[in-house]
Image (tube, rainbow, N blue to C red; front, side):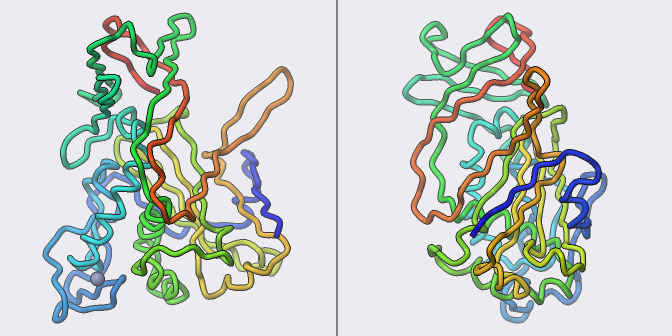
Length: 325
Ligand SMILES: [Zn+2]
């Protein structure tokens, strides 16, 4: 199988020719999805006579800064199950959550390194403080004052890849309408099953990620896209989902739609990327377009991984406060 990832930032990109937006969640008002009287859990199918709906079910996790979007179709037992998966989603971002300066349930996310003995935390949106016992010896954060960039090289916390993917798919399924979700019964079952490798659909199990950019989102924004009804788009997955929070942008394609089972034996499968996620690097007179694609099919915990990147900053007080972009 050939996997075609299309990277085109123009308005007439393949992404916008293949998909149209069917739902958006933007942080301008409080939203509660689903029927508030007749509550039925979308994930286990149980009603209020069989299960409880006492907890506030967040559509996007709180650590992303979600304080406004809830649902009536997630029961308490599914809610705590997804809460466990979301630990991996949070760890997958690790230090990026701290640099995002988004406020979760326990305030801003802290990043600690116990071997190098430093702590990074935010005390306001876009304001990050570093507490460091040995600033001279710290090789994890090297400030380049000439270019106003900080080079970061840190150990990230561990995570279970398939839990990360399931957490993102769960948000997307919350945003789906009642008629489309009928095509995703297999996906709903898979969400609740123990993680398993699936060789046939392994090509779907990825997240496309962009970190940084011109904009920073204090609260998450999420968009669900549906494929246009056109025979030429046969080898495109039916739905794709994009979420932005802090300095992070993710895009996934949703697995196991009953109309997509032919994809596992297709010669070519297309994954067009939403314009906003594509990075642009100008080298001389050549512009290079890129996207990070990370495999999330694994079922074993990925132990602490190193992440290296650089971020722009504004020095407020020497080596104590940085403004991340
Ligand atoms: Zn449930």
